[in-house]
Length: 295
Image (tube, rainbow, N blue to C red; front, top):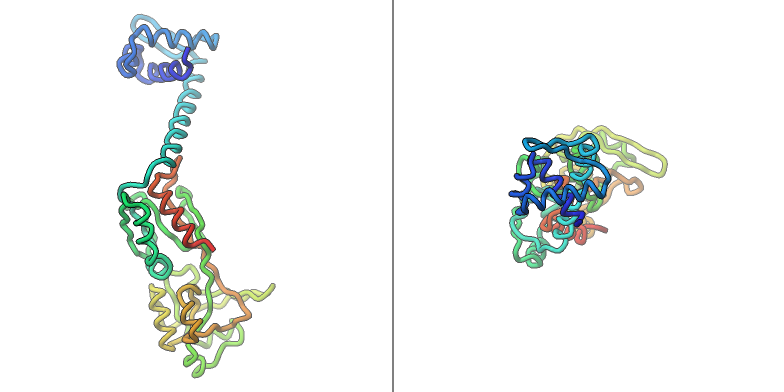
């Protein structure tokens, strides 16, 4: 007896409700179907199916065995698919949603390299700071900066952590003075990135000391690049991911404020629909992001 063949025949006969239908489905003779099931029953020393000339029905042990067989055969199919996925080349169209600023600052220059590595793959990249519904909107993956990934149906892979820096232009600090402690920010013009989870309160730490400051500035905006432009213009002070202002800090165009205090950090995740295995095009882009963004 070929055990796998016998299990497949048994499952097919039960699902289709007759030996004749299983015979047609599997391309076997009716005698071969009957022989496989009889040999399986002999191997198990248990009758699995009651059959008459008109109908068949599972015995109680047969029903229990059928449930296990279905799970095992499905798991084997998934295992085959997972292996095939690792051996397949990425092809087709990959649809990705990503926040605009982190992509423009940290990724857009290297994306052509990814596409050169995978000539059979096309990338449809949507730059949007809103939180998309991957399944409903047909995205394969999304990049999300968040402390709270509420959708447990998605797989999340942490790519990096965006550390934030409180900074301002020297001109602004010359006119308004530099805050000495986080609580002094209530007297300053704080520029807010309104899509941030920390838009209305900024938290700072210095050793064991923690201070959270409520923020309600005159300028709230949905773009971190607009926040950066306002900082450069000397309009106020803001808490912004360091990578967005690294060149400005290095050149002295902006300066760090409250340098003894550390501020909020935002983890950046790649999220994608939960599956038994990751399709090649998603795996390829995930590996690329890890290589480019992991510290």
